[in-house]
Each structure stands twice: as structure tokens, then as C-alpha cells.
Image (cartoon, rainbow, N blue to C red):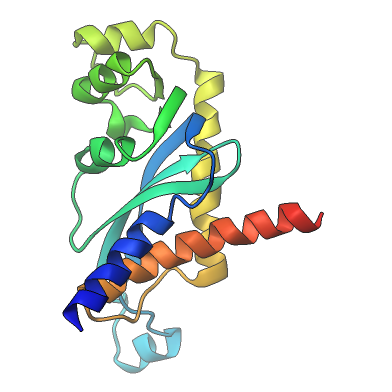
Length: 198
């Protein structure tokens, strides 16, 4: 039984990148929170609590801005800084041209990683941070206009939550993780079916 669970989990993890295209030109990276409960407004009012208890898991995502599909995700039980999962995600995609990210990803280590891979970063610079050999190299080609393509990943994350819910009722960690992957796969497949039938 344990072996079956493990095989299913591995298959789900790999299934996110079901697309036959193995090279991605422009990719965005971001993270979002997924609530572990979905209490109704009536319930919150009934227990006389002004705000619901904040209990959520963190999902970091790599997103193909051209095809508007999820490439890779990583789910954590507890919040961690966004940059912690960047390299993990990038190793799961063959990015050819550009990586978009907000200021949370303005890290010298990430700029260096992308530079060595031939990837131009379009990452919003943090205020008053100018140090870093690779940061300066990457910033020479930074474009505020191009950076705004990053908003496509927010649209994708929002669309997935509206369609499949921004919460999970699962209690087991493996089930939570698998649910997150399956939602991303379903979102990708839905977009593919729309493209096929149009």
C-alpha cells in the first residue's frame, strides 16, 4: 500500500510537466498561499471571531507566460522565503530566454544561476540594493515594460483558484501535495482542451 502511494505521488509530481514542449522561452516565478480550511462567513460570525485563523500552505510556481500553463510547483507545509524554492523549480525546466520575478527573487545567487544558464532575469530590483556582480550584469538589460509580463503568473494562479478552489480540506501531507499538483495539471489540460476545440 505504501509503495502504491509513493508511486502515485511520484507520478503526480512528474505529471505537472505533461506538455511535450521541453523548452520554454519566457517563464515567470511566484508563490501563493493555499488555505488549509475554508470556513464560511457564518461560521466565523457564530464563533464570535473577527478574523479567521490563518493556516495555509505555501505553493511556489514556475509558469510558462506564452502558453499560460504551469511548468513546475513546490508545496511547503510552512511559509518560507520565496527564494528558497527558486533553484529547485528552475532545475525542472529548460528555460531559453527570460525569467520574470518580483523583488522577493532579487537575489545575487539567483542572478548568477540564471547568468550561467544564459537566462536573462527580468526581476524587479529591491530598493537601495545595488551590490552584486551578476545582479549588475543582469540589470543592464532590465526593462520595466518587459517585467510587467510577470503579472501573467498571477492571472494563472488566480484562475486556478477560482476554478478549483484556493483551499484544501485534505489533512494528510501527501494528499495535500498531490491535490496541489492535480489542480495544476487540470488547469493545464483545461487550457489545452479549449485550444483544441476552438
